[in-house]
Length: 112
Image (cartoon, rainbow, N blue to C red; front, side, top):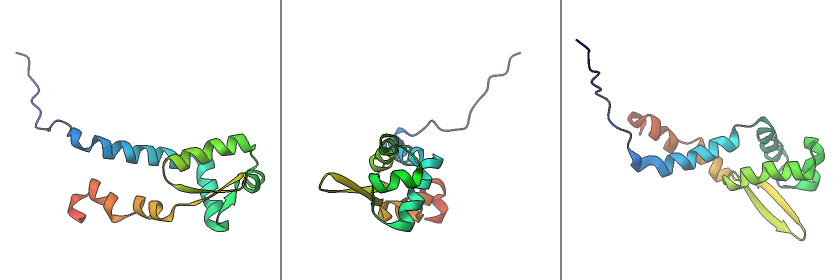
C-alpha cells in the first residue's frame, strides 16, 4: 500500500514577496568582488568620480559605470552630479539598514 506524504509545512506567504525582492536586489548587488572593492575604496576615500575611481580599480570607465549603476540602483551608493561628472559615495543609511536589527527580524523573529 503506497504511503501518501502529508506535509505539516505551511504554504509560502506571498505577502512578503515584495520585501524579499527588494532585499534580493540589494544582496545581489553586494555579491560581487569588484563591487565590494569599489565600496571599500569609497568607504576609505569618500565621494569620488568615475574618472578618479577607474584607475584605482584598473577598469575602463564603462565597466566601472556598469558596477556603479548596479550599486546605485540598489540604493547602496548615492550619486551627485557636479558639472559633467557624477560623484559616488556610500549610502551609509542604507548600509546601516542592511546590517541592522530590522533585517534580523525577518529571519529571527525572536530577536525583535
